[in-house]
Length: 287
Length: 220
Image 1: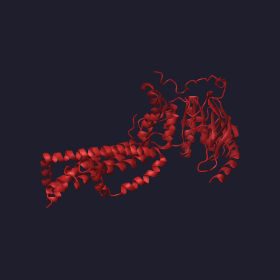
Image 2: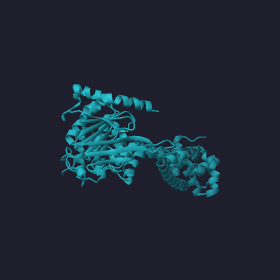
Image 3: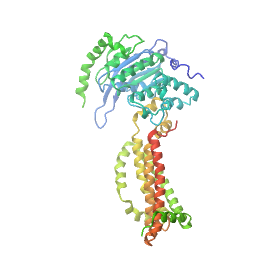
Image 4: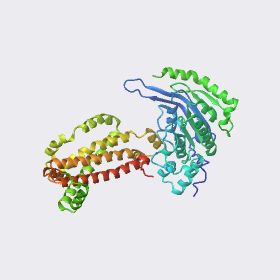
């Protein structure tokens, strides 16, 4: 069985026929993306997002920060194929993303989405079993994923017996076993306390290094974005557009201790200087 | 004069071997089985439909609740007009007791499934059938089992009341007859038998309810 071989390497990318699929091209390419929600009950349509452009390099850790309601989660939904763009295009590995989550994309949501009726092991195995993966391979891949996220000792536990942070890790494991080449995370640590959040961030960095996957993280935490990312996209108030793209320049081998680095303060300060006015706008616009 | 526990038990022992009593039990069991099948089946279907379609559910919920609070015994003459004196009237009367709580619990269970489960299903590229089987069903199961449990008790109540007031057969009819003939021994023995059966079945369903409530009992 080859199951245990390499969770640490994502399955090789399928190269698309177009030039966009060639080596060195963007892993994810977004062009002119706009999302408009149709007005209900006589209200005018709501422009939630864009137009925005984005290129993610393979293996990049990219974070999106922005004021509440700026369309961060909408962006993730469209990138994942969970909702359609009103205009513009999204492609993953050279193939257009339309209305369906592409193979090779994993999503972790903000809310706890672990299934309470399944054990930790069965939760993690859920996606593989739906694909009728041979049981020996399921066991190997799940064991490896649980090891990666530090839940090996809890395989038989049920979500109700775990803390919020552990349940969120179960959801990450369920995504990891599918060996995604692009992982989209929608404020996955939003509900956790600050210390757990920092430690989970370290875990995420380790996973990112070991899997080699491209990560897009939606967050409202300036610190989280500054600590974790290679690049940070700062979004404007609704309709969300990128108003700044910040290269952090961090080493690939990093963890939350870089919070002590003077560069960390400089990055958060730069994000906030961009974000302050936008957050005020969002606050004033809030009903 | 009330009979004592020992005398009641002894009498019940004899009663269990009695042919007429056995016939009564069979009549009640048959009516109850049919009524329960209808109450559970239609309650589940109604609940699933109302749960799946939010607007219909929101419109139907207060109507169902209002219907449910009508004392069903007042509808019994109408049911007798429709079904006549016989098995079908008892079945119908039992079923109308059980169907509404099963429907309400099922609807609440379906509505209560966190939307993120369905987003997770889509992110794992599950089709509608796989989503229903592997996510919707196990997620709803604890609520549905609670509804089935309540439906069980209320359907039994309905069938027995139906037998008491307009029937020539069944345990309910035996109770009324014992009351009319002032046969206290029979009355107490019947009451004991019904209490034992109802609490036994209730305890089993409660155990199942707790089991799926704690873990859910979805397929692997």
